[in-house]
Image (cartoon, rainbow, N blue to C red; front, top):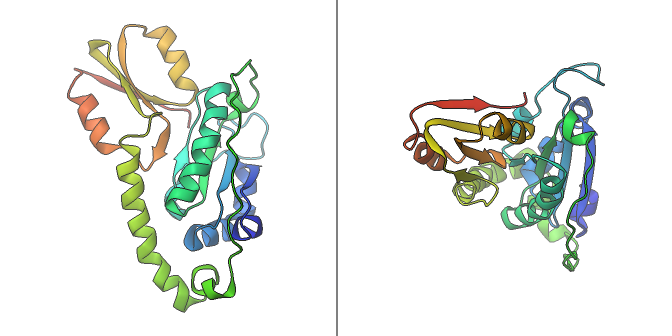
Length: 223
């Protein structure tokens, strides 16, 4: 939080139970917004392979009213990071990127890109205390701005390039995110797919459009 308030892009990563410990500052920065981009990687562990408990941290994104991105493999994890910082700065919000056990433990050759130079933002000065100091009188002002932010993010999700329809046979449509996308493409090569890269907020218009094109829908996720 201090780094992004000071004008430097910041990245923090933790397992799902780590976010329990960091919940207080996470909810605070969701309210204040950012100065430079802030991305939190939540490494969830469905099936409890290497953790003391199991939880779905997408609920934290909904609680905090921040967007959450979900990669399908190593390449999309790399690609989504650039989008995550751009979304953070465009919409004045921290962004969650949710990995799961299989993605966190996988590796593959990925195509890299030359990183774009990012000019450091101006230091958040005392003139911006109403934005960054969450006394109740300031937090009350921020709340309607968070609701406006969510409305803009919902519209953005409808055109986000990692939310896309791939038309196949009409008999079966599969809505999926994360690892299940690649596995179910192998099992159902002829099916139609709606692949979700942003799972909160959901692109409701895109989902309705997809549903109108298929006879039966199967929803698959790594919970």
